[in-house]
Image 1 (tube, helix red, strand yellow):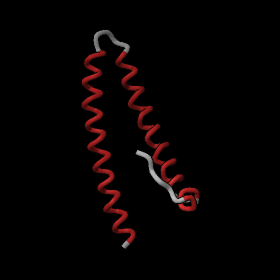
Image 2: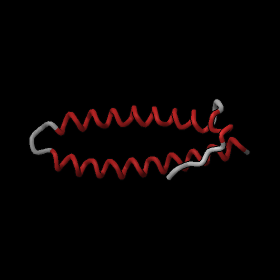
Image 3: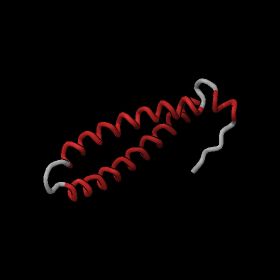
Image 4: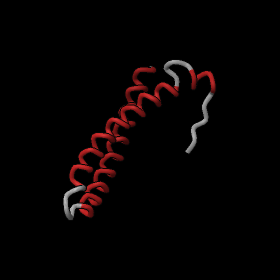
Length: 82
């Protein structure tokens, strides 16, 4: 999915680009912590398949959490913009 931007809004401070960059930094930091833990345990014998199951569960939980965060963000923005 590709987003379509209005040039002026996209480039300005506080525009979509700066917001996306902030979120991107947070996601990278969070992924780094998760990868570090997975790397620590994947090196042990016979944990590869178990880690795959854990990763699937973790992925579903992250999706649910992101959906919840987006709902709360929507509520917060609706309150702030009224």
